[in-house]
Length: 292
Ligand code: NAD
Image (cartoon, rainbow, N blue to C red; front, side, top):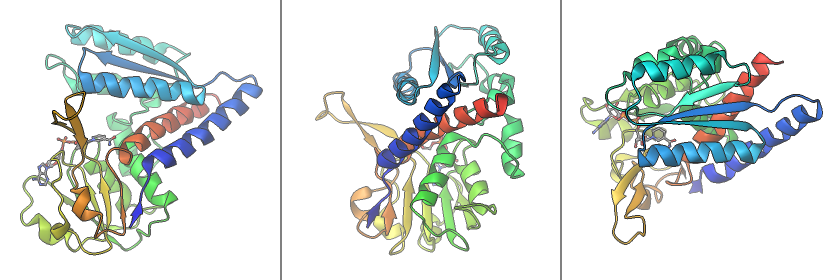
């Protein structure tokens, strides 16, 4: 079994980005600048945003963190987004999800300038992805594609089962892998909560991508021998033996599946770190498009 090491691969990608940034600086160009908007004090969101800002520092990007209180109104947030859209110093920005319940997430995502939408959530960018046009591919599917490519996993003509149809993971993943592209050309089945007899599908799959958010859902009896297994899930499971009171669990029962799979991503250290690296890559891309 080969571990698809997202931690190591993302470190390599960050090194590559850092090299590009130092070349930009040598040519007296400004470093790419990523802004992140965080509304409220959701623990996981604060961790994710913190990691993104730290990653910016590591590769030499400029970063701005805008922290707004939980009670921020939708109008106030939209106003903040307009300011970021109009600020020539900002190359790209993200609005950390989820947002408080009183704010319409879709309104907010639609307000982001598609040219600065480094999360790739704007309908314009999702449409461009669907048509295989230049776009910002959302970071998690982008990271999985990169991991498959760098580990030279054959995908052409292979059967992929994606479990989950969310806008940010399952759906774009299924589209990307069906396209004519590196790590693409696969025959893709997309499964979801209404899929019947899921195990019959996964047992036939050469590659299984689990993105449903149910800890240890995919078990060894659901995969065929030598399958490639990608675990997207991140769930905080209460665990008193840990100092912080929880452990991070993936959607795959790593213990049993790793004994049957040819390649597998661990959790943590698999897809998660790749997501941050690809956000940086999108920011670099936004910067290059704006200031070639
Ligand atoms: P979501 O809740 O938006 O979507 C879950 C999907 O799973 C839905 O489409 C649903 O139909 C499907 N599903 C639910 N139960 C099912 C079942 N029993 N059988 C088959 N399908 C079922 O979740 P999401 O935003 O796509 O995230 C999925 C998981 O990935 C979560 O654990 C999330 O934390 C994690 N995630 C990780 C990263 C990362 O960087 N590694 C990024 C995004 C999300």
